[in-house]
Length: 359
Ligand SMILES: Nc1ncnc2c1ncn2[C@@H]1O[C@H](COP(=O)(O)OP(=O)(O)OP(=O)(O)O)[C@@H](O)[C@H]1O
Ligand code: SF4
Ligand SMILES: [Mg+2]
Image 1 (cartoon, rainbow, N blue to C red):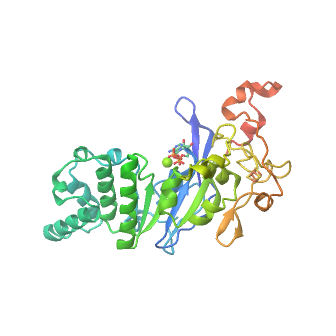
Image 2: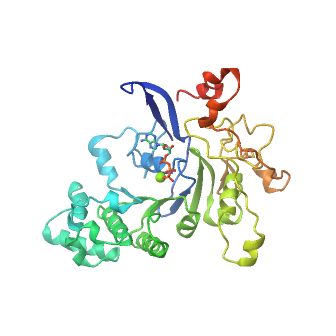
Image 3: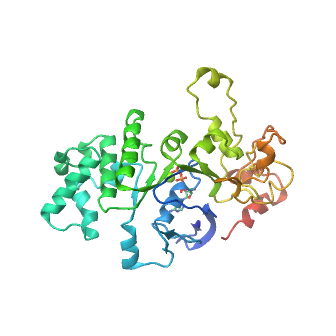
């Protein structure tokens, strides 16, 4: 899957001067009934990937196969029918729920669109079932989104996704906007609903703690690519990719003794721009294990190092076995800094900027 957004310039935005490589070659599969956690820094392409999977964003290249059916060429009615089975839960329920609609009308809307509103009585029963499934009283039906707390609003968002009886739910940062005390409740609710309705989840989060609790498998994204994928235990006990190691080292450990001696890997420099990603391994500008050969020039493929544990790093085995040690990283200039470059070509921009124009 690739999703490249054109960067437009010119008076009527008619010139494409480059692309944001939001998702740039990701290949992943989600098994029926599992929870797949997708993590990574802000801007690495998680939401874009989730949206492209549901065909809410048109991919630049690649395809989506859902339950054996290729969605790539689907349009119109067949796509709409398929979409019922794939629903999205958003980060901020306040902005994803229309404030002028009552809860009843919010929930009935999707059901009606998919022909699931089959009469007053059965729909009424269904609405009460939905509310009870997400732990809200049936009196909520007549209320409006602003009359609820953040956690309750997210329950409405979840009920709305459930209203059309989906198989897959893509939850994009489902608890990031909620108080910590409420986060666990909503996570537990998602887990209960999964068991009850046999749902499959893609849970997107930048918070590793959220994903750890809920996921069977975890994928780590960096600048539009998947750098590591493993089951949840493996990724927390033995992260193999340098980027995952750094992410993990930032997660506090509840044991104060372990916490004191814990090694932290601080990443030097900023996240490079996805409009001008580094050559070779995209992480090489910040990688404490970077090597002279291959890292800057060759993009590493996602390889399986142990059963089910995939890593995109040329040197993963050597790092794992201690043959290569971490070293200090000097922050490098990113694309936004290029006009401070002192070479003769600086007015035209460095070669690396122009080279990446075009998909
Ligand atoms: N419609 C769009 N047009 C142009 N660029 C976009 C569009 N949507 C996303 N982007 C860019 O694509 C990149 C990836 O964005 P995306 O929202 O997928 O990241 P994310 O990992 O979900 O980040 P966050 O954790 O902040 O939600 C960003 O640089 C973003 O600015
Ligand atoms: S390929 Fe090189 S730069 Fe990339 S993560 Fe591995 S060691 Fe680091
Ligand atoms: Mg996002």
